[in-house]
Image (cartoon, rainbow over the protein chains, first blue to last red):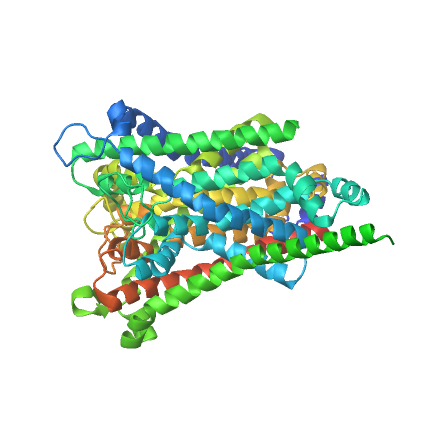
Length: 297
Length: 315
């Protein structure tokens, strides 16, 4: 009888009014639980495969030279992706200089004054921006920087990465600031501290751990981007520290090595992929640690 | 009021005003960036639209940069087919995973699995492309596609020579990449559901699955749809993995085994070496189409997720 009542609650949905025997229902329950568990396994198999192969195949390529040397032409033994590692770090640093202030600033705006129509518009645009494919951002950086400068450049790549950082940062910053208890702000205001100073030195300071965490995750994400760099920073066979010149990156090197027909370059692609995962892993780990410290504080 | 106090208070007001202006400018920069995206794409693509005409460009099937003939249809087709394969494969797995984590598993399993799903989301797409090209493609070419062809060859989807590269591997890798998106948003949606509803069903004697089927899924329907649309948006715009796996042939084939092309892939391959304003313009036009579609999708998805969250608050 109890199950009849359950079914009438569920009227209109797929469960039949006449329910089967207790055992049949338990069977269905067990089968569906099994299927859901199978989904977990199915989701984790590709992850395990990717990580395992990148680590085992990439290990063979790793050496001091791989981290420090320039790439060599096909067939020549040795050589590395040193310029790609430096190029990625360089462009990500440049992108952070542009993207972090804008993203965090937009987040502070949303948390502090995001109630009005402008706030809603900004929030909507940040959501739209988060969904824009990174290749489109690459086209935009091309039109903004490469066309007027008549040159592929590290700066163009950095601008593309910076735009990609803004929406995630804005959203995370807003959430972090909203987590700060209102009583802190009120206490500061009650002591006669001006509102702007309260925002900066009380609210923002309290949220700082969360902001660092968000910034590290945004940087890790930018380091793994390839598409927006293809026709902004292009690539470079040599070292480069000039923001006006084309620059190599780890991700574009992986792409070029992977689509080549040479075994030797495939091995380098796995090695470069391992470098990239180590870099992203280190940044994410750092982010996790800052997050944990914030919880403890 | 003493003069000193008046000055401090005026200072405070100036500080507040400056702070407000600064913040508004920073917030406004997001609007500015979105505006710049539309403007730059429109300006770059203007020469192509002027020469080809927008609808002719969209519906054209011929893509031949040498003769300045540009039609977007093969790319739109490839993008839709690979995304459809990705959604069909990823949706059941992601929802199953989300249900298992929120409704069935002990807390410890939940933490471990969500950690791994987070890692899956953090792997760059070029690494998935590398894995797809050097690991998945040989398996598909030698094992999976011949088998599918033998058993289901009468279905046009699984006909033709097993190449390894093509719509199928691109779709499979896309499925892996959008799975974390769909799963994590679905989990968020399921978490907003009031426990009392689920407990009510269980208390009335429903089994766990019956509670899911009769109460949880109907309740979370809209949010899950939003999660799938968000995943679709990611699949449509995903570039590197698809570029490496789809085969890069601007052709329209009915079979999943055939090689094709997608919107982001052609931009990635041809933009740097585009010859002349019309070719660059046509590629920027494709970017504009992609922007328009993902804009509508993300707006729809956020709306759905928000509606279901609002319902959670009011119930």
